[in-house]
Length: 184
Image (cartoon, rainbow, N blue to C red):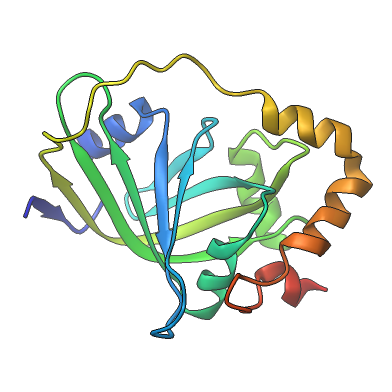
């Protein structure tokens, strides 16, 4: 079952900062809706306080996390040790979407390296931290970040990225509006 904490402790923060990849999980409220589980990387995760985290979210082919957070706010983050001692750490909380051009963006954006392909920042208030053994997680070697996202964004250009968001990021696969939909 693991060990639980109501906040992010110093050893949790140290573990998070060492990880090269994490996962986000969200879900709509409806029983028929699709769960979303997404891998994330590119050093975009920040522990902002003992009970608040954020990550820089890039433009992608969908925007499920945004739609689910707009609807109900539930989010879980998972970090796994792929080298060193085995460990899994989960952060449970309520999240929200911070969009460029908002007053919240001015507060949070300086804490991240913003790229042309940064779509939004996800900020979450964490109410439960769980660690577990991670014995079944294999060992992997981190070889670096893939350049594809940055190359794609550069080719699209600012207007192309805006058009892509309008085309692909306004609703979830279940038809739920994203934060970008509300902004329009």
